[in-house]
Image 1 (tube, rainbow, N blue to C red):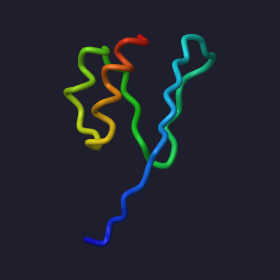
Image 2 (cartoon, rainbow, N blue to C red; image 1 turned 60 degrees about the horizontal axis):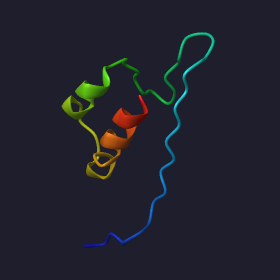
Image 3 (cartoon, helix red, strand yellow; image 1 turned 90 degrees about the vertical axis):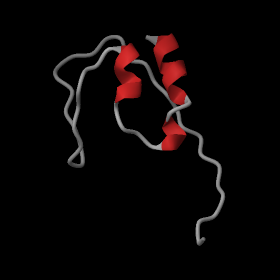
Image 4 (spheres, rainbow, N blue to C red; image 1 turned 135 degrees about the vertical axis):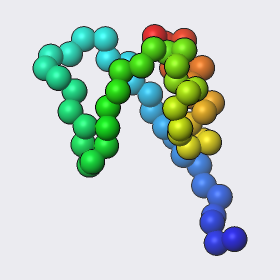
Length: 58
């Protein structure tokens, strides 16, 4: 296995007010979902522990 262990600090931001329409970048896609639906979407294993924190903030 050529992978190396590393630490990743992932910052979460909550934006409650904005102007205009969100735009995806780098070929990504956007979708508005309810907090309780977050676990229904595919995501990297490392992101799964963040779901509870996101749900608590929303």
